[in-house]
Length: 529
Image (cartoon, rainbow, N blue to C red; front, side):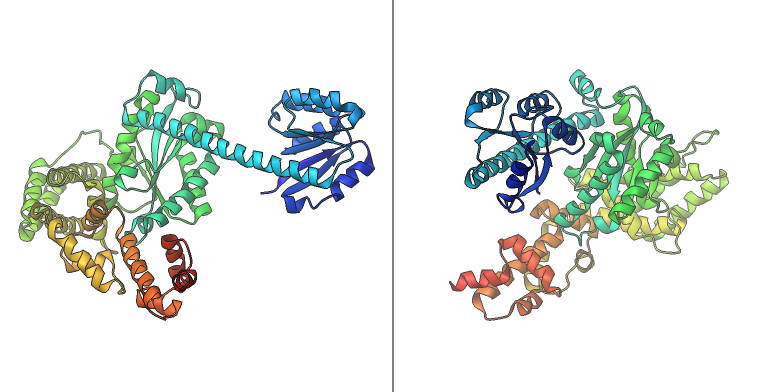
């Protein structure tokens, strides 16, 4: 990125000479000019610059007066170089007291000017590095304070810090912005998911502008869920004369249009004041497990998904408990009978959509509890969501009787796998499969079907053992073999790519560079050197 320099002198010939004395662009500078200090100050007010090179003696406003003015305003970090004659050395000394970067004695020599320009470039690089480091630390500190509030584990210090950035007494809610199913697929590497998440975050912060501080990237990183967290307050909508739902709809639309990525937003319960935001955060998390059992949409509101009728809550507990027992035993015929009994009871009670949702919620949470008792180290909510979605096909209504039966069958099989602790032997077999067939079009779905293990569960087991996604592990094995072929054979690059399973040579080259820090061609040359 080019640095902007402003040359200031009341002598036109000196200005022209400074512009022509060297190739400013080659040194990384974009040149502007002014004929006195006042003109320079006006220019800087609307066109920030990185460096000012100014003569000391000028009409209207001297170089020294310009320096003093800049140091006392928001432009105090501008680098400043004084031009002076021998007779003006005392002025130059005074300029140094105002944190002048350097001074040049007239007539200006090319080499001396180049030395100063490179010094300023180096100082600017160091300053940018320090600013970036400071910004990262400040962002990390802010995120820690926000997460303390969301988890409900906060103190007076957290509240005081955030009171400078948010009206802590507003009505507010927590929003979770998720990458859609395609982005969450195990066929995407971790790096690809992170890049997509960065795009979402960039678009979100662009929309939020001054409220971007309340948006946190990768809130659920410990669960390997790629998402953003955001605290919406009523003040934000009021500033734009929008209701909460209008604001969130425009927010979502902006993200989708500007990233070309399908995204989903879960909106937690509206609460009063920042002290209660953890309740909203908790309800947004609850919505995650319900997604796979609802009609697919872009926006889920807690209040809409958990509506309670005026007549009160009707839970068909006996029928649901019987169904849960059948799911535990994995008895398909019994499951179908219990589903029929549940729907029959719901019909007898005059079922409404909200009542049905509450009953389904009860069922899902009980199933999550069963699975968590068998394996508490994986994200059971996410697995339930994926099982629910994988058993929903076009033409089958989500949450309908057929979908519920299919989901119950699949979940019963999943619980059986947990009880048998299938992870002990299956991962070893799959590792051998990858070693033998890495060049084939292996997918997590195909392997899960071959070894009779739920694909969502297999994906989490794989990540837990190897510390990466299935696709990243497969890529690693392919690149290892590609490196061996480059060392031991005379195969051409495209032949190596095809031999290890890559149909796209450019994609292979990019993955090879990521792993080895150089292109396959350079790698092969270095081996022969």
